[in-house]
Image 1: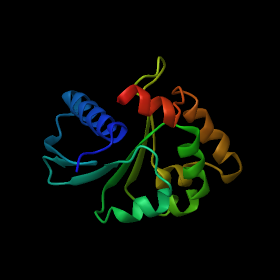
Image 2: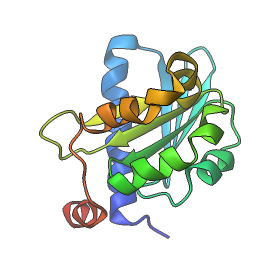
Image 3: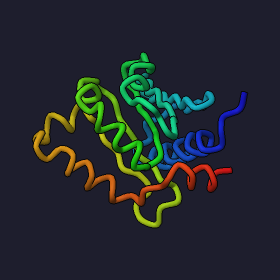
Image 4: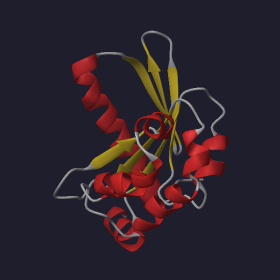
Amino acid sequence: MSLPAPAKYLADWFVRYTKNRDLTFRKISSIKEEGNKVIVEQKDGKKIHYLAEPFPEDFGKLADSIKEDHKGIVVYNTLDNFESMIKVWKKLAGIPNLTIYFVNPFSKLEKKWIVRPYIHAKISDAESLEQGLNSMYIMVEPISKEDAEKLTS
């Protein structure tokens, strides 16, 4: 069964981004794409499992579905995705080694913003959490689900 176009586009974009980023760091020994999963193996033996899930309904359940220690979630930078993450922030902040990528490959500004909830929760104060995350969210042009589906089909 093939992936829906937005998921395939997101996974492919993330693989290209990861390879380009590694041109500087040279840490990666292999990258495997298995549907919407991207498995990055580093030269030190560490494996990071990413799920390219364009429009997750529940970030908490999605994070729990990745059983590996080092994990990531790659989503489109939609308002729904941002609000969905905020709703389960406390749960996400309790998961060490989780990285979330919010992406809009079509943005004229930045293409992605990245948050590690476990670390972010430790260094930011709870009162300004949503404001700080919103500042990162607006650095990348938001994309609607409809536009992502149209632009990737």
